[in-house]
Structures are given as structure tokens and as C-alpha cells.
Image (tube, rainbow, N blue to C red; front, side, top):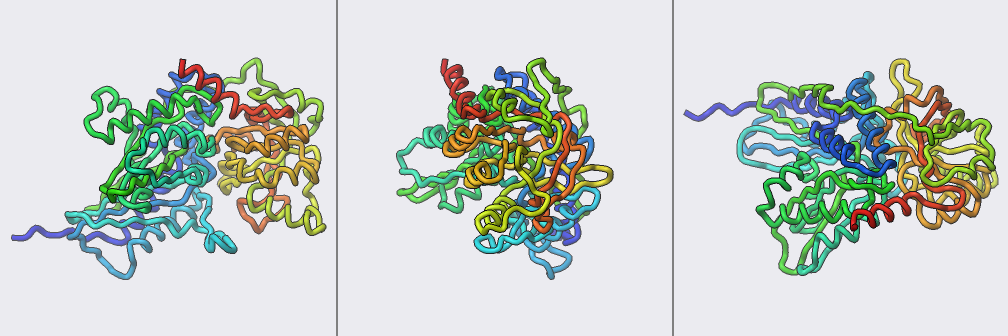
Length: 506
């Protein structure tokens, strides 16, 4: 007799996707927490160790509060492997439509709303779809009669740092990674993983790179047992070369830049060697589940004992700054690498707000009523909506380099004193900061829930129609930041890695 084939319910896939996306919004995978804890213990750079501490504290807080690890709750990527013998209870929805319905439910969940970041018409109006759909779904038919799903929420800051090359067959892939990784800057929020796809065609390499990031962190086990295949040897080679670059946590210089190297490869044309590298950030979010017809996936919460007991203490060298009264002379005393605790009022603004400000200034219309940047700091952020008694949802920094093209305009015409974001600034922007005797402060990417607890008041002051990209006024208390570029143009994202590269080479 033939074995009975289970029937997979559409509702089970939809519910499982929705539950999985909520789950990964606030739970880091245990292997990632363990790897970060190990990196914290090994780290010798004070700035990098401080950044890793904030990421781990944020991770535990998110797990306890069931609120997003990062304000960028990502674009959903889903790998669905469907057994050739699978039967669905209904056929009115495609796999794409089922996954999208799960995404829609997850991102509009009133108990833990996730930030909708997907825009339609990407080359035109870029209008937000409001529910984070559509997702990116890869479907593969495999033997069997079950459905296996690997799903991730990928932040834009790390996704934007993806790199691709069509290498010559004789080219050294590890050397290409070693050369390319420093050009990615810190916008991908290291330390994290690098997923590398090798072979196939250009698009096949990219999909393999992305799927490789779904695997657990296991590089240390590989180091112990030793490499057995060409891909494993390459993983170890790239891991060693990458960490010797000294880029470190948040690009501030340090011992650990990558936690693991993942590789997937496929046969390719004799004339080709396509290679794609995609980083995963400090808000690594992915989970796997399996459907066999018995109901939706059961995702068990991790134990809070899995997180290390780490505290973040205010050192003697840390200075508190009152943003309501800070003077130009006081700001010019801050030096690259200093840690500050910000207090008082700041304005926010990111891509869409800057573009609109530019249009208003260039048209002669001027800034909207209530928006005055003179003597103020702007925080590059797009927060998650608040729930319950929250003032604001998770509100970590976005990648500052995207605002580089607006910096001269802002400093020259608005009286802006300084900027707050994550990762490095470009050379021209550093020169502009030096010219205008301004400064750039860096908050830790991947510590959004922790940062939100420093925000005591929040209100929209302009461009409410832009949603999370509106201009807010935040009133903060003891918000930790690092002086990344001081008024003399000294850049911590250059000096820190340079120092640690020399130390690690020695």
C-alpha cells in the first residue's frame, strides 16, 4: 500500500511565516549570541568592546521585552523547499502570496508592529507599501512530501554593502575578499557574517550567497576539526584575512570584524568565476521551520540564560553633553574617539526628509514652520512605531553615508551644528565637517531598543506624511555616542582600523 501523503494547509504556512517574523524580530539565534559573547571576551579594543557590549545588552533587552532588535526590521527573504509529493489543501494562493500574507500579518501586529520599509516603483515614486510586502521568495522543488522554510529579515544597511565580481578563473577569491571588505565601510554593522556564493551564473551566485547566511555560526568547530574541502579551506583563509584587517566592531578598529564565513558553490562555465559577497549585520535575524501537515510550526522561545551577563558602565572619561545649551567652543573640544552622553533635544531626518529639505531650500521656500536646525544636532533615524507606554519604538541609527550628498547644504545653509548616525562618512564629507568646524557622532548600529530607552519625549515636527522618515524632535537622556569625526576632521573610522591592522599584523 502507498504511504498516505500529508496535506499542507495554506493557513499553516501563513501563520508560521507570521510567527517566525515576529520571533526573529526580537530573538537573536543562540549561535550568534554565543559568537558575540566570545568576541566580547576576546576583544582588546576599548571602543569595539564597548560597541559589542551595547549590542549584547540590546539583544537581551529585546528578548525580554519582545521588541525589535533593530529599527530596520528588514526586507523579508524566504527560501521555500517544497517536496515533489506535497499536496496543498487549497490552490487559490501561490507560494508568494502565502508568504506575503504572513509578512503582512507579522508587520502589522499591534502587539509588536514592525517597521514597514518596502517601497514600490523603486526607480520612480518609491511609495511605501505600508505592510512590508512584497517579500523576496525563492521556491525550490525537492524530493519528499514536506515543506522546509528558511526565512530572514535583512536590513538595508548590510544589504547595500553586497559586492559582486566576475573574476577570472585563475583569480584568488580570498585575495578579492581581503581587498573588497575594507571598501564596504562599517554600514553593514560588523561584527557579523559574510555569505559568499561562488560559481553558477551571476544571479545564481547571489542567491547562494544569501542562502548561505541562513547557516549557523560554526567557524570555530571547523578550525578545531580542520578543513576537508576546498570551500572549507577557503572559509578559514578568508576568516583569518578578514579579521587581520582590524576593521573591528562598528568599524572602530579591533580584533573581530567577522564572526564566520559562509560559502555555497555551484559548477560554472569554464571561462567564468562569478563571486558574490553579502554581509549579515549585528541584527542577524533568521529561523528555519518545517511543515509536515500536522499544523503550523512550533517555535520555542530561547532561555534568557543563553545571554551573557554584561553591563555597560559609564567610565570616568565619559562626558555628559546638554544639547540645549551646548556651544560651538564646547563642541570643538570633543576629540575623535571620545564617548559622550547626550541630553536634551535633537531633530531627526534621513533620506526622504533630506531630499525634501533640499528642494525647499533650493526653491526659496525655506524650511517648514517649527524646523530650526541652528545650533542643533540631527539624528539619522527612522524609528519603529511605539506600543503601550513607549515614547518611541526601537530607534537605532541608519547609515550616515547616504546623507553625505546633503551634508554641505545642511552645514552651509541651516546652521546645523552636528550629525548623529552609524558607520563612516565619505572623504568629501569629512572635509566638509572640518571646513565648517562641525562634528559627526556615531551611535551603535544594532542597539536600537537600548537607544530607544534614552529617548524620553518624541513628537513629529514636519513631514508627517513620510511616516518613519518624518522629522521628529527627540528629548534624550544619557544617549551614548562616540565622536567619530571631530571638528578638526580626525576620523575614528580611519585611525582605529589603521592602528589595529598594524597591531594584528604584528
